[in-house]
Figure 1: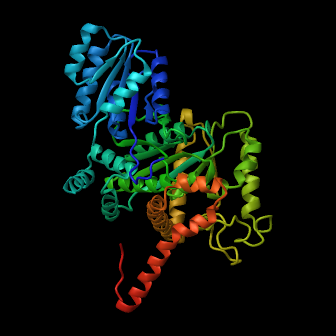
Figure 2 (figure 1 turned 180 degrees about the vertical axis):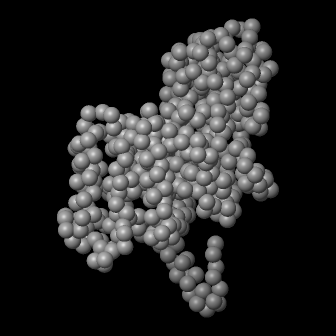
Length: 138
Length: 368
């Protein structure tokens, strides 16, 4: 425990969007983040982009991890990014995408503002390290 | 500093993100958060604050969701603070209450914020109280605090509320016994949720018996009103179902009602809201509300001071060689915790004594 007064903690929203019932990966990430000392808010399944935006804004998360295994990332993620922008939260939220996302789509997502895409086979440690290093300073 | 002023302005103007940021600052204890919160006070006092507590799985989140929905139907805005435990080892937490709050999704006028403890003892109740202030200043009509009712810390949190509902699921006959110790005293309303399940009637009956025993006067707890209760002053301050029994012709006290709900289907939620309203009315009419608020602020002041002193002592501890070395010295049998505490506190005490004599001679008060 640190003796300093400030008690900052990295807050993350782990979100499942759209018609996609596969949440094992999201659960694994949520638990790993928790064990890394982060505060994790889990959205639950089948959330609309607006719901994810609402949660991200209200919870004022540093990191938004979107898990998509349905293939609808090119439509859903831009909607989320637009929503974040609407509330002025796009700039200082680290947005990550995970799940089954083909290589050829990655550039487009990055152009949308996604900081990193973690596909199958990414180690949990790698993801945590990335968050630690890139979580926005506010 | 100016950004904080902007933040405050945005919050008062009703910007969601500003509210979210202010709550984060409160949670982080970021530089300047104190000034921010003290600015907030001028704009508070309009919201009804409701605490919902009960064992895990009692249906708190679901009920809170339906409450929010009903309040919204009535045209009132809602703030929700959902508190979940955090790991004492890593500080990490999974905050899952949001999942159950689906009825009001897409409606930004229901502002849900998940919080968890960060390190310091009692810190969460201060942070909760401050977050309530932020939501109040933002203009929320109703603020709901949801927390697992276990332990003193949780009770402290829920005491931030004007009206406290304790959820008791059916079939928890034995559980009621355990509840007695702490949670029951803080209940202004009992909610038997999942009332469509077997054993609900019995649970209601048991609660009724208990309320009668406590409030009946001639019963077990009726002998001496103040002695019958647990020694914490804090609970006495919030104790509204044992109103001054020394007067025989007592003013109409608050008898804790029992409301049956089936939260998942929204059954009984209207009744519950009516009871909240009735309790609010009772608080204001009986003058207990003023007392409650006063007690709460007194506690806030104490907590703040305690935290400040605690922080000062941490530095002092560091100066004395760090807690690890001191602990090691105790382990080696060289000294003991009491002597160390005396030694660490000594310079502070001398300093304070010096201040007091200064004060007396100069008449000025010197705050650091």
